[in-house]
Amino acid sequence: MTFTLEFTEDPAAFLRRAGGLLEADPVLGTVVASVTARALDDPTPPAYPRWWLSVGDAAGEVCGVAMRAAPFPPHPLYVLPLPEAAAREVAAALVARGEDVTGVNGVRPAAEVLATELARRTGRRARVHEHTRLHVLERLVEPRVAPDGRPRVAVPADGDVALAWFKAFHADAAEQAGRLEPQAEVFDRADIDARIAEGRIWLWEDRLGAPVSLVGFNAPSYGVTRVGPVYTPRSHRGRGLASALTAHVSRLLRDAGSRVCLFTDQANPTSNKIYAAIGYVPVVDMVSMQITTRGRA
Image 1 (cartoon, one colour):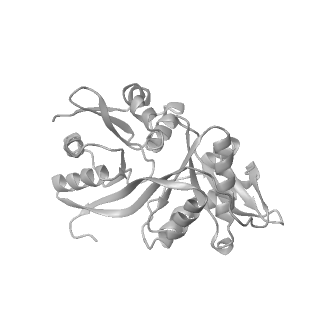
Image 2 (cartoon, rainbow, N blue to C red):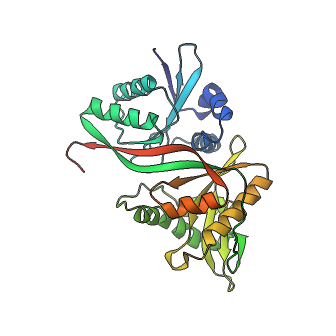
Image 3 (cartoon, helix red, strand yellow):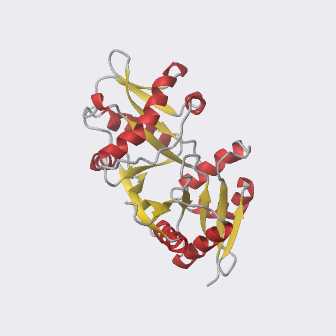
């Protein structure tokens, strides 16, 4: 079967073509939908690669999508489910376009097939950097024991703490999973201030009023809100703070009418156990692939 590949740098054009696919499974498409929505709100061309791809089958129906819109190096692709043959065609098209792709994130096995084919066509090798899993809240289970303190929405004065914890999240998560090279998003104070202004960062504060844990979430897309990051500094871990705050934020989002989802690192048994205990169930396995020169570990 031959597939039709439509690349575009216009998020509105992409949604006209592929919005139906995202709407049909908004949990699975949460990352693509939320990134595209942000691009609609800020149409200024960025200084990094940003485009979307819709894949059409023989009948002309969109059967898969991908995008390259990550603002952080190596600006990896993000791939939703694709037929294996389509994933190979996408790899061929990327090489023909002259795209220097060294990272592919997304749903298994499409991301693995695409990364492996890209590596083959460029004389490099593909390796797994991280296995993640997408979960959705099925039935909220309140934690049995509530830690001291209380949850509260972040205010502008919390900006410095929130920014530091957003940045620390990826490094600490990688360390907990035994990885030395975190693939980190880029955050700045303007981004954090915008999230705080929209009420999308919550903190747990102790009895003295000091913040001790953080939970953020994205704006909803197609009725789905994605929780993250969830971060507790090392000195405050093991007290149930992340469980209590994640449950609180999840309840607020659910009661506001959203389906709620989040990602976990499969190599971090603690976070997987925490989220399962409060009612999150697995949806699909994801993978982050790196494409490197041969001989590099």
